[in-house]
Length: 226
Length: 226
DNA sequence: TCTGGGTTGTAAACACCGTTTACTCAGCCG
DNA sequence: CGGCTGAGTAAACGGTGTTTACAACCCAGA
Image 1: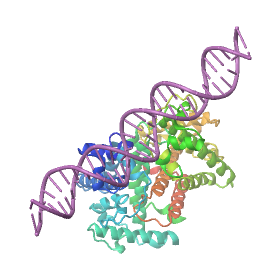
Image 2: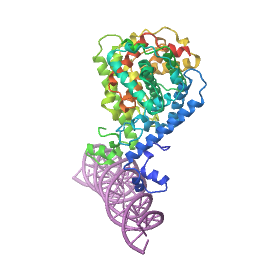
Image 3: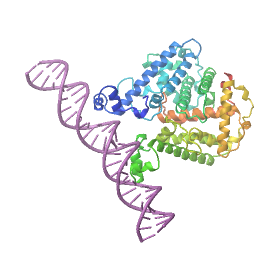
C-alpha cells in the first residue's frame, strides 16, 4: 500500500509472505475477494485506533471525544491516503457477500457509528426535544428507518438503545456530521479544493467548530423548514 | 470507462481506435499522462454540461442557477461513477506538468468556481457586509489568499472582479458549499453512508436547502465565533 | 522523377499481472 | 506401511505497460 494502489498485487503479497502467487488461492478465491478482506481489516484497525484515541483523550468536556474521533480520522486519512482511497473512495460492489459475520456493509461509514456509540458523550446528548414531527413527511420516514437501523447496529455492538431515546434530529445530525467530515477529509487527501490550501488544518478546525455549534443549537432547522 | 476503471487500457483504447497499443506512444509519453489528459477532457465536458444546464434553467429566482449546478453535478456523478472516481476521488500526483496552457490544477474543484463564475447570480450576491475582520487572524489570511486566487481564476475566465467586491464570507461560503456538495455526492456514489439510504435525493435536497438558508443568512457565524 | 528525411504505424519482445492446471511433498490417521 | 489431505510450486495462458527495430507513407528539394 505504501507504493500505491496499483502495487497491491497478488505476486507482491505472496513475495512478502515468502510464497508464490498461486498459493494465495488456497486462502482467497480471487484477488477481488482478498482486497475485500483487506478493506475489512483496514476498517477494523482504523476503528480500533479511533476508539482507543477517543477514550484516551476523554477529558470530560462536551463533544470532546467526538472531536477527537474526527481529528483522528483526518490524521489517519492523511497518513494513509492509499488505504483511505481503497476503503472510502472506490466503487466496489458492496455485495453483502455471505460471510456470515458482522456483515460486510457495516464496515464503511458505520465506523463512525461504531465509534460514536462507544463514547460516553453519546448518552449525554439531551437532544430529546421530541420535535420529530417537525420534519416533512418523506424525510421523517427516511430518518425513522435510519434510526431503526442505527439502534439495531448499536445493539450488535453491545450498546443497548431504544428508539425513544434517539431523536430524529440526532440521527440527522450524525448523518450531516459524517457527510461533512468525509467531504473535507476526502477533498484534503485528494487535493481537490478549488484553491491552493496552505493551512488545511485551519479549515478543518473551522468545520469542527461549525458542527459543534450546530449540534448544541439544534442546527437542523434549515432542513426542517423546507 | 463503461466497463470500470481497470478496463481503461492502452490496448483497449488502441483497439477502439483501430490501432495497436505502441502507436499511442506517438501521442502520449505514458499511460499515466494519457489518463491525465483524459481527466482534463472529462472535466471540460462536465463544465460544459453544467454551464449549459445552468444557463438553460435560469429562471431568475435567487440561487436557482447555483442549485441547478449542484443538481447537475450530482446527476452527472451518479450517471458516470467511474469518471467521478477518476477525476474527483483518486490520488494522482497533481504535478503541475509544464503543459503551458490553462494549467492543470484548476481542472478539479475549480469546475465549481468556473461554473459559478459564469452565472448571473454571482454578481447579485450582496454579501458585501464588510465584516471581513470578523474572522480570526490566521483564518482571515488564508481566506484572503483564496480570494486573491479566485479573482485571478475568474479573470482568466473572462469575468472581471476586484477583491473589494468579494467578501471573505462569500469565499468561505463557496468553499463550504463545494465541500458539502462533494461530500454528499461522493458518499452517494460510493455508497458509504452509514445507513442503507433508500431516498438519497431527499437527503440531497435537504442539503441544498441548508446551503441556501445559510447563504442568505450569513451562516458562517459559527466559524467566525471560534 | 528520384531521393532523402520525418511522421506514423506495426511486429516482436520483455517483464509483470491474475488465474488455472498439473504436480510434488510433507504430515497424519488407520 | 498405505493412502489421503492440505499446502505449496512450476508451467502455462492471455492480458497489461513499455521498448525496440523496422516498414510504409507523405512530402520537400534536386
